[in-house]
Length: 258
Image (cartoon, rainbow, N blue to C red; front, side):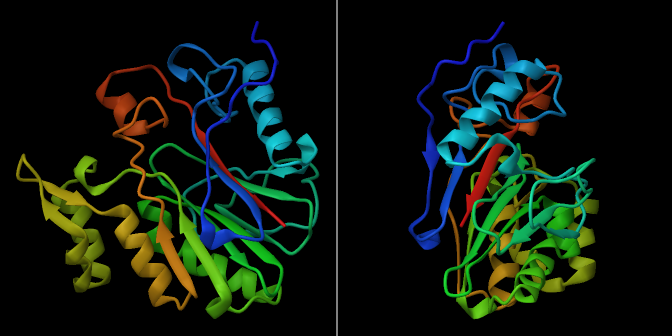
């Protein structure tokens, strides 16, 4: 049975989000074992439920909120956003981003190669968090998050957006049909693809996310520069798990609160 003594968490932060307590949590410092070794916060994984509960409690403690104030969603690779005013009653909403202007709520997103994106408008006191894989980013989840923040009084020119650890271009080989899907939307998207060692396209997911954010008019946008695929000690990666033929994979948590 996992035990619950405090462990040393490894939390990445960004100066661009100053004024909002936040963290892109790595896998270090958790109660899970085996392929989930570390801080697996994914209740949808086949990990022991008690281990995931302990891990999430450690994150809540680090964020200085009660466990039920660490707010997540049921992610479905959509462009949909939930406006949060308190802990969820009943089932988690099936959306991929959440925003709030309520202090004391830690918005959270789970990832394992997709982009976790944290947002903050310090002047308006509005925050957001988005899960942006290639499909969600292409379908507009980042722009939808900005729209929802504006609905709470934010101004996009005042919003800082930071993309956390995700898969980098050097690890993200895709097919020609994948690339054509992007080019059909915008021919200029060719700049996010490069030829890989096997002659197949390599996709720049964080580059695409940054471009979408900047085109949408955010005040600042940056990527932490960490590749989930390339650092197994710090990050879970769906693609690395697939390449290793492992049975399952952990989920990283990224969270922000006012």
